[in-house]
Image (tube, rainbow, N blue to C red; front, top):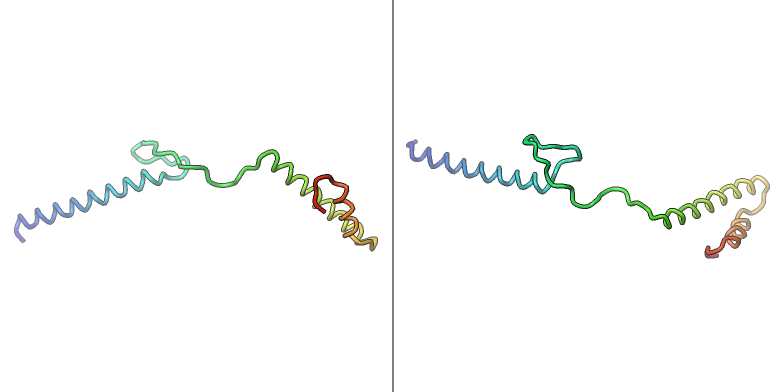
Length: 105
């Protein structure tokens, strides 16, 4: 192989390596690592876009869930007590729902 051919091939490999490095750097910029991750060069990186994970409830939503769970647990309590006495649990549940304002029949 002649020297000029070797130089041409090495320059092509250099161009391919530079292109690969550019792609990896762009990927690193667009996809920062997990929290607390710091790249070796000491740069901070870009902040994560948006918030992921659990949806937080508003105060009104928490109250609604609280009321729904209170009804659920009281219904279960009535079902257990009426199952022992032989009384129909469905009749006591409907009476309880009628006594609560804002609940559909």
